[in-house]
Length: 401
Image 1 (cartoon, rainbow, N blue to C red):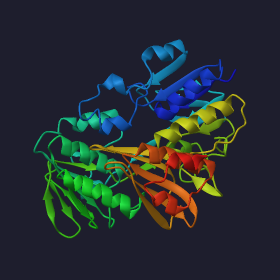
Image 2 (tube, one colour):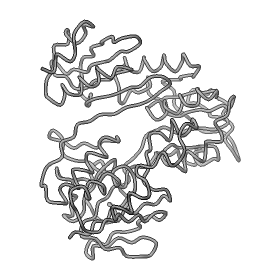
Image 3 (cartoon, rainbow, N blue to C red):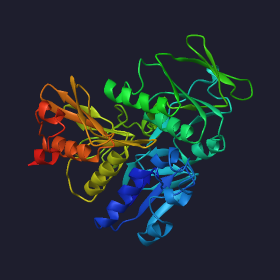
Image 4 (cartoon, helix red, strand yellow):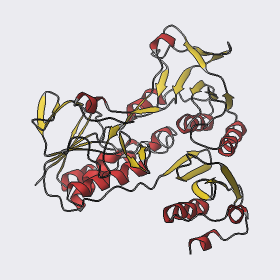
């Protein structure tokens, strides 16, 4: 029976361990995480947890009893420092832990700003771990001034929570518009208006020159010379795959830890899943940063460890909660050349991405029906006529027949 060691104790690791047991794997399973907390949900950290709506234990993916009942060992609070591929061991806290199959589910790391421009000042925060959020939670008090660097989904979710709690919020984005890397102008316009309606200031097309302060953040200076006061700063400037351990072990990298279609790395005894892993996709390689992919890819790897020999077929989906808006995204919009707008009921709206006549993706705001139908259409390889999609009288569900 294979002895499986998983480096990482997040969403992918928890999904993989549970799937192994459900598939009948009877060998040892060990999850090793550098955080002291058991595997937990990350998305609510910057929303429900920060708002005080969720306690810490409600973040946990599984109860402590689950791991005991399933004979899954948790080794928490210490990072794996090296992999010995020849001996098939990993080193953690000075101990060598042996494996037959090793899974790297190391996730991703928030990008930081250089210390030379104030990135290391007290009062500069990122949003990734429970400790990250605990470190800044006390700063979210009415009237406090926060500058959020980066107008992607992480930054905008933080802005929404801060606005709801009564803070003075400014988002700065170096690109010409928020969400430029991930969404169409229509979606950017929707969320810009939403944030402005709640009092947040959105500054686009201007970069950050430096964070001001000597012993603590006092403000920021923008590239155009403006200075904004700030009691603290949140960085939402993206993440990078956590590949340092894999690189030191000599594994192949390609926008993350490179795997084959089954989830194997360049070492046949080592697998990877989640934010850290890239995999074959439509003639190229793809790395997805989402809960959905972390779960699906990890479960595919678990199946292959137990002998399924089945390639992973990604079905990308994402979501974001901001104020009273639930954004649901199906598919990948890369290469689109046309946006079709569909009005839903009430304030619902959806934007459908096409490349010529092919449906690529859907952004649905408060419109779960448009999201679900769009997701199914993409999975089925169907592309309805854009004119039909734009007609609010069209029965979307009928398009699935």
